Image (tube, rainbow, N blue to C red; front, side, top):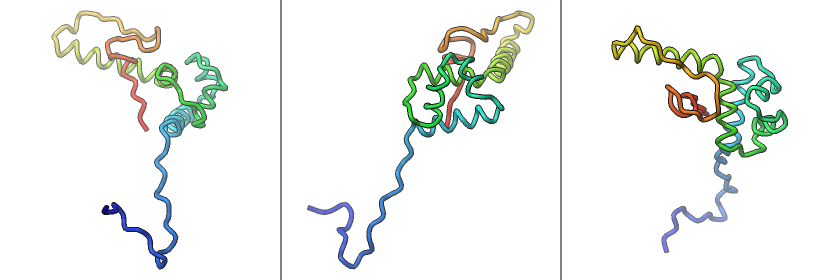
Length: 130
């Protein structure tokens, strides 16, 4: 048998554990909290907009809970708010010009069930990245 790593000897210093990879729930929570604070919003604001209880949202932000995709989508939609509407409208205008249909009007869905597919695709084009 050939070891993948050399076996420690008595002369070797105490081995250090490799750095622990962060948990996804910690990273997601940090992103949510950072974005909420950057917008100057409270937990209560985002909780009401996303329909997620304030206690649960707090635990997600602290990495204490593994949020479902539906909860993450609701939080992302609540945090994207105005930017999502303006990005979707700009994308729609761009597509209309490319198709030569600048005179026609197409409605942009800004509210509705989380995960609804609209002009920007599932979740309205919201991207949650660490």
